[in-house]
Image 1 (cartoon, rainbow, N blue to C red):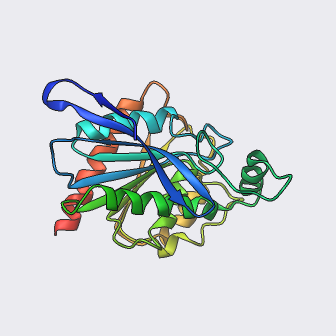
Image 2 (image 1 turned 90 degrees about the horizontal axis):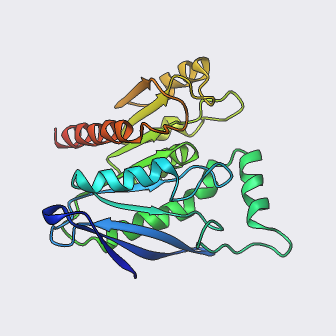
Length: 244
């Protein structure tokens, strides 16, 4: 693993390149942590769809991976199979582009579930016994993946879903079974936000939940720091809810 020190003085933390074994893939990731502090809270970041700036260096994902450690969280971000340095095993003649194109056309949020599970388990195992909670923060396509992840890892205390697509052609049948605290952050100018769809689906989502409509678009360019502050606030609230 390649390690780089980031920060200044007491706020130093390390960023390491890690490799995560997943079925039919080896995932490239970046783990950020404080080397001199026992990790108690961590966050798994889930990127957008690979055809829509869906890498771990996306502006929102990268900004969060910088801001969250300063708030005391260890952070893991990673590339989906076939993206960046992450490998993918496919049938002969099928490219990674073709694979992810079919995922988008078929609206298969679960296509990223297996690598997300592998990354979540890796994060829990590598940070040691002091780790108490691993939260999930997903952006766009990653928001839906993060919510789906709670079906299989009920210990997830919270999911923050940034720019969750609220589009009439999508199916949201997986939402009623989502566990933990759920925080939705949506820009009022988001091209994937159809208010009537959100209003229709909202009653099916179990408590605790919160919908935050903010003055922004889908991409949060030039407002990443404000978004990160809101995410941190949600994580703090989730910690309080968990302790009640």
